[in-house]
Length: 262
Ligand SMILES: [Zn+2]
Figure 1 (cartoon, rainbow, N blue to C red):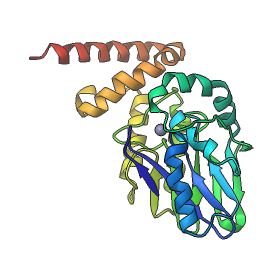
Figure 2: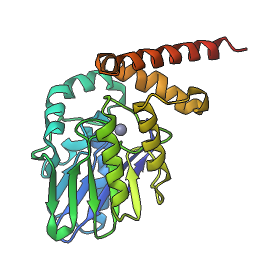
Figure 3: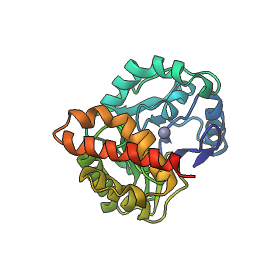
């Protein structure tokens, strides 16, 4: 695992297989990927075929793809489409996060459900949640599960009101026999507490039973200023419109009260 601290904590993971080297996510450009190249060389694996995997098409997970022109790039079909349609805009919006050269290379080898490298006991599979294209990787040999941004502390970032499929994806993680989970922006997890807490948040959100007063300040901030803001329009258009409006109003009052408090 290679972790970067700047501009925000992010993990990239390398699997040294028998015949392939897999690089899971490529962070913010060619500069941080130099470390990954060196590590592969140090292991004596520079001549092995390289497989890059993008867990999803958020910029901080694929901007370094251009550092691996000789590799095949694996990702969900929708991840490829998002990089093609959203890539240029991400470069403008997050220009100050560019690290070295960035070439927008979308996945060249896509899948809908799953893609398996049987001999290496490595599988990539679709786990929609944080984004609709979110996918995960299970290394059965080392029992390492790489989940991109689907698992996050203290609560996940939502981009859609896709609570049910997100919960199903997280529950599928609990069924796998992993010894370590690597998430995009958290230290490695040896236990399932955080997954269970993430599921609990999504269930409560789906049922409109979140008690705002019971959330920690960081949870409250992410819930109101990130998640509610991002999926507001989708919630209002949904069949749960009334409950959504009520919750949005509650959240608005709650933040007003908080700011008024001395
Ligand atoms: Zn991310």
